Image (cartoon, rainbow, N blue to C red):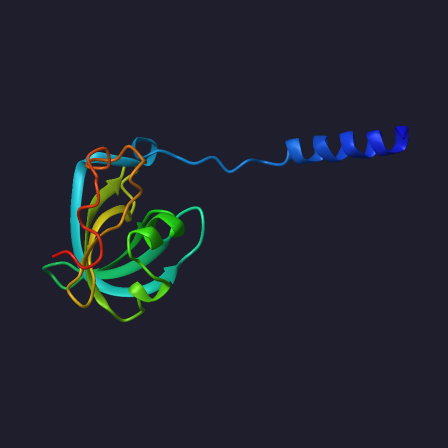
Length: 145
């Protein structure tokens, strides 16, 4: 009995010592005073927890291409809003409205996305504290234009 209790305690301590991946808020990483709107071609899609990421090559007025890493909501949240894994396909041209990272990198919190077929979808987490999240009540779901 003592051996089982010791094993259980040791296992619990090991699990407690593992680093926990904390969920971050919008304000921790992004600047609500730095809105951005980009149109470009999807180069990569990572549909996994805790947030999806997709990468967009966008050209500026001079023709210079910049690759933006766009963070979306969690797969489960986006799925409930009508997104599917194939909503974002490599090579598709999309438009993303969101907010830039505080550190000035090409990291964007995507809030609204116009997909290749013209469908407009909400792309963020409704509970992340970002602009518009508190008032999100279903607007921008798949199929709305």
